[in-house]
Length: 272
Image 1 (cartoon, rainbow, N blue to C red):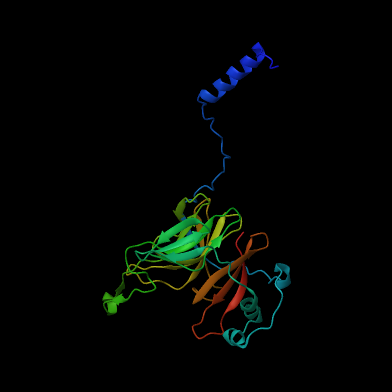
Image 2: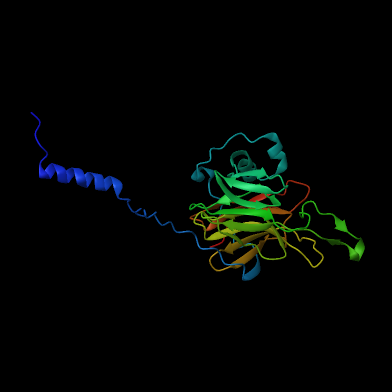
């Protein structure tokens, strides 16, 4: 024998129907707030100086580098065994992947994130611990400086080109140019904590011709930059920063002051 519905059962049934039929309001879900790195200040001061005092070279074992056999071609390239050992052991960290667009530009991708697009993006890039990327790119409308041809002869000669520029891209995609104007700048090495940046630069004269290479170190929070020349020479044939050591207070730098080879030296330059 079936039992009749009680008042409580009827009330529960009506309440369930109302829950189903009455539309519900969407409750917004709060997403976690992530702080983006502040954009660096543009260059406000550029000071020329000689290289500061050179620190004693640290043993490679301190950086976890195991000495390997030095190839014959590296022994011929330099007379400095420390440089040859660096070439044999050091590998530049590759940041992102460059792809070409249908329009002929280049795009830098970091995983699934489009980081930067320009006419040309240089191979040597770096990234800080929080994901800020430093890169060198040609964004101007003229021929990239590496491909430009001299127009005219003698005193009328000039070079019309678009130089390379150093750009910073924050983890959220905000971009800022940090290299000084009238400069061809490349090979950026951002400090692991993202406060300072080192790169190679060539100042352009009023006819567009670049000077010899200098090492530049900039403070991204103040916009103050220093240009370092060699100890014995006012410029370098080639110079570029390799990595930061000694709690980011010293730069390990490769320096070459000759076109014929065999002049390359490795130095540790105190910048703080």
